[in-house]
Amino acid sequence: MFIARFAVLPFLLTTLAISGCGTEPAAATSGVAGRIDPAVTSNAVAASSARQPLRPGAKTAALDKAGDRLFDKTFDDVRFEMKPEEPFRRKMLTPAIEQLSGQRIRIRGFMLPTAQQRGIKQFVLVRDNQQCCFGPGAALFDCILVEMQAGQSAAFSIRPVAVTGKFEVNQFDGPDGHCLAIYHMDAEVVE
Image 1 (tube, rainbow, N blue to C red):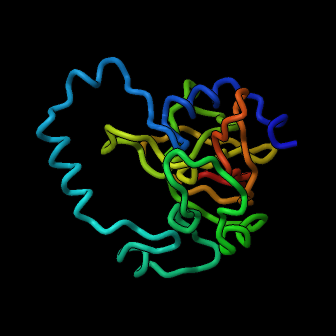
Image 2 (cartoon, rainbow, N blue to C red):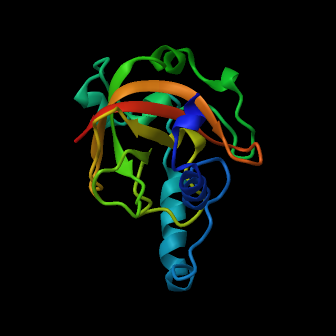
């Protein structure tokens, strides 16, 4: 079973809860809150609310120009409609996401920091590195639990990485039954 294979389960639960990979707001870190300039954050909120929200499956102009090969996917390809406090139900997934389950894909994102720098066997791939987020955390569909295939490992990077492997929809619940993640990859390589 998927959950039994994840040897670092306690670490992942803590990491997901702190990072905001879910539908609830991320926890603030103690040192950051006092350094945030309210004028900067209010300008950022105003700018982000002026933009049209991206519909599930819709792509930015840059992604649209890059093409839509079956192999290359983005976190926009695995988005779906979900209200912030709404519990996850499998029927929320779009047919396109259901078709991706079991397919070999390559997706780019950021590795959630770990204590280990090399020889990483499991990690969380997230949509962004949270450099621009001070408020609510990432949505449930903005993270993928990655497990490297036998004999493979990854090295931590602060830069975006491309993960290639088999994408699956597997709900990952915490000890309290709250859904922490829904996507998983058996990764061949991390570049």
